[in-house]
Amino acid sequence: MQWSLFVLILMGQCSFFTCHLYEDVERLTNSSQTTDAWIGLRSISSTERSWHWSLPGVEFEESETEWGTGQPDNGATEKNCVVIKGQQWNDHACMNEVEFICYNDKLILINESKTWDEALTYCREKHHDLVSITDSHQQRWVQEKAKMADTEFVWLGMRYTCTLDLWFWLIDRMVCYDNWAPDQMDMCGMAGVMKRDGEWHKKANHKKFHFICTK
Ligand SMILES: [Ca+2]
Image (cartoon, rainbow, N blue to C red; front, side):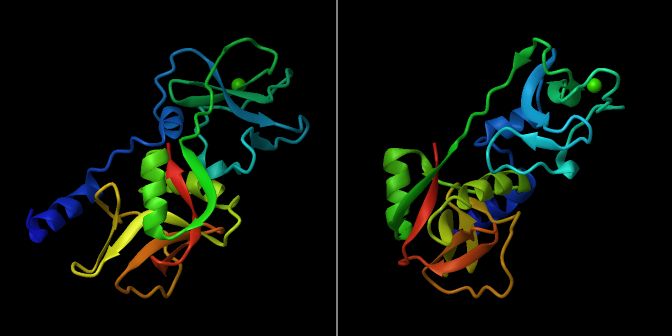
């Protein structure tokens, strides 16, 4: 394929992207659940509301909630657990019996130091691929994994092509959503890493870091 055609295809993807890797997030944001089902969110303190996700390390963000109209409506009965129905959240009494949605983690942190190419081979042989990030939801999940790495940085499935002066993801997508740290220089032979704080940095691909694979 000619490079110019390849670039055109990549560039066109910024506006037509659909996520397939993070089905659990998709399911909560695009849930077609027609009856109440528990999600892993509850309030620890019943007097003053303080919501927490059940998954360790995942922080609750008020700005990312999907409360239904008038919810949460804690009243005479304590409602410290949360159900989803038709994409909307509702606080319920925890002793109610309803269906539930399980967490399905698609990411695996590999605590072994490898070059970018070695990490890519490892992920493709043992799991699926090096992780790609194409929106803020995915960024959040990957960031939670990166926090648990023993190295300051973890490899992402992103590399720089000198010929085209472009950064692209292994899943053949251009870098549309990004979270670069400031003042990053592009050089040949670079690939992308995430620092523990979630920011992306550019590193020579022969350096050795831990990395995150998709399952
Ligand atoms: Ca309610």
